[in-house]
Length: 208
Image 1 (cartoon, rainbow, N blue to C red):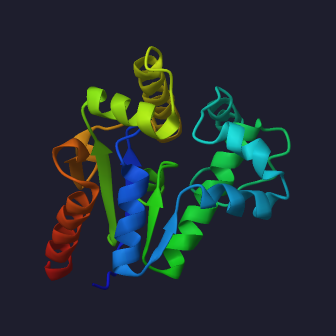
Image 2 (spheres, rainbow, N blue to C red; image 1 turned 120 degrees about the vertical axis):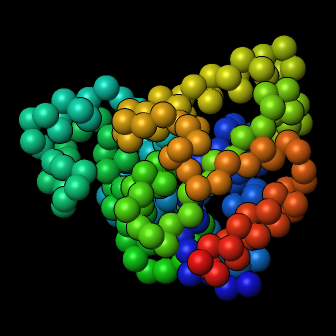
């Protein structure tokens, strides 16, 4: 199945968003970007990837102040960012990279406010993946070898971090259904079946 769409996936922690995106990209024979965006940002900026890894999908409180001073604009080319914290610098660089990737053609992009960055593109399908916290906590224990007594708190904290990041840089509510084309509970079916549901939706959009 070919696709003409850019597919963005926002996801709760351990909801399977990364895996679903990767399987979907493989089935559609299009490129997949998640942590790869960190490598691209590091290459673009010359900054060590490990520095960006610590800042990835975490907000600071400085960007709005910088915007108010006219240092740069999210709707135009960015001015030099040497004085910005690494979190803001990473967001700005990834913002540009996401637009460049979308210009090149169909792909799957996970996280990094990609749905917001590409919100004006008619060929963008915006997906939010969620699941019951108990299911995600069990997966976090299994996949990430988390302490069972701390796993639930870590899941909640990671979700909160992602929500703060999204809300700060987009000024929209993370997980709010109105901001997405499709919201999917991955706990109700397998990852492969979740991909099949998304493929069905893509086919409908292709027809329309």
